[in-house]
Image 1 (tube, rainbow, N blue to C red):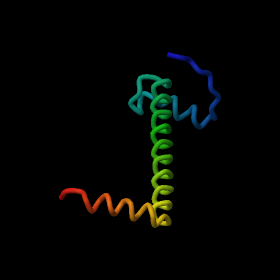
Image 2: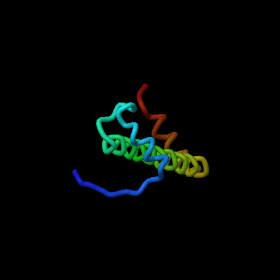
Image 3: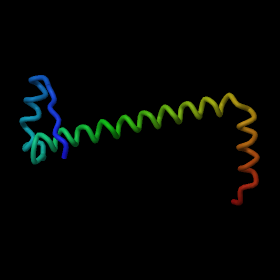
Image 4: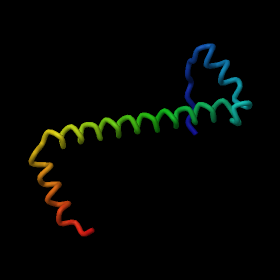
Length: 77
């Protein structure tokens, strides 16, 4: 694994020092998990923004709605 030196506030350090009581083997594993959660949340936010953009485009583009409806009408039930 790659090692990284970071600076954190005293409050964050106090929290991280409780890694064992939080169910982690080390401070490093706690920080890795925190970053994994941050990445997951970021991806979800990006996906939500993309869905909103597609929704906006779909709601304002009559031609796109007609194309979608024509494709769905031929879809077997």
